[in-house]
Amino acid sequence: MSRILFAALLAISVGYVAPSSSSSSSNHLPAGLAVDLGPGVNLNERFFDQVRALIKRRLQEKVLAKPEQQELPLPLAEDDAVALQNQRSYDNVPLPAASVPTPVLVENWPTEQHSFGQVTAVAVDPQGNPVVFHRAERYWDVNTFNESNIYYLIEYGPIKENTIYVLDSKTGAIKSGWGSNMFYMPHGMTIDLHGNYWITDVAMHQAFKFKPFSNKPLLTIGKRFRPGSSVKHLCKPTSIAVATTGEFFIADGYCNSRILKFNAAGKLLRTIPQPPEFLSLQVPHAITLLEHLDLLCIADRENMRVVCPKAGLISSHGEGEPAATIQEPDLGRVFGVASYGDIVFAVNGPTSMLPVRGFTIDPRSETIIGHWGEFKNPHSMAVSVNGSALYVTEIGTNHQTNRVWKYVLA
Image 1 (tube, helix red, strand yellow):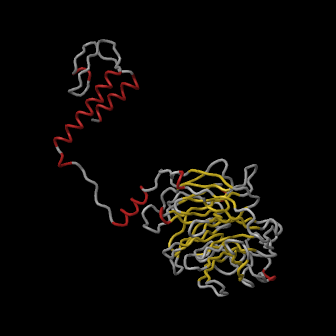
Image 2: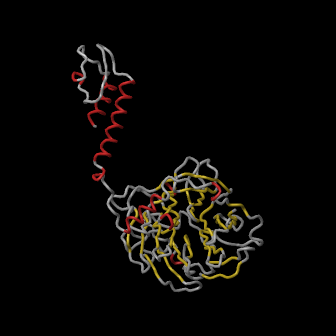
């Protein structure tokens, strides 16, 4: 079979000319291929038609003659089968337009103005209430850290007022607050299905797990005020994503540009990226899980893209393979990501002359499928568990620019 294809390719590349004695044997073509070529006549389309016909005929003969020798695929191990089925369920399959919700701004929400500091994070608790994490009077500027990423202002102590506020989903009014005298420079926050708060503080170089309204963490990752790149240190961690299995991921963050995966007890399981994984991150600013697709989607801020490597929650099969990558000219620096179902919502920040807005992303087809919203300096976002609402926070220089937007997903 390969000789037939080789003859065809050779004819194309050099222009085969038949010798003057035109017998089938002198053409050096396989038996069964009758080609009547006269002196000086080039192979033409008729020749290739006959090549294709012969290939088809011999394939049929092989199948009929030896059906018992057809090679069957080997059975997959259970974990690999699940992973392969999961992989095939989404690769390059676009989402139907009707199944993609569109964020629609809720006007005049909240109904009363708040005097928040820089609102660096928003999450939604199991009751559907949006929860904000803010810096009160603190600002991050060129005088906040030295060249070794050591926080300059430790002597001022933690922020004295509440840094966490639970809001009413309907009115945006403050329902309760906590987190005073605990944090120095708030950054990321997420709330898991059990109501636990997962928080990062870039000044302390730590990530925490808290029960609501508790001032003692259930779990702490990183060394207090000690930045580093070892497996026991963090350096300005930005975000946390928590799986229903209890496993969690920390985006570590401004210095190390890596993702750390832990089991529920806080044991390190994996670093993303790791050799031979071909993935380079530049400030992973936010992360979100798509458990159905077994993907972890990352706001790769300075690379101006969203990348989605395998999370490895279902199986380790596929870990380290090329990540789904969404990078288009209008995306810019991505600050926030949040997921619902099989889609990802994202917001960019100020990037040259690009519009600052929201994006709807299909990681399966690696495309942006929608645009929405208009912002100044968005920093984080979150979707309610039931998918009814999406919240976006902005940071600025006063309480008018430090705010939370609510969208309904229609």
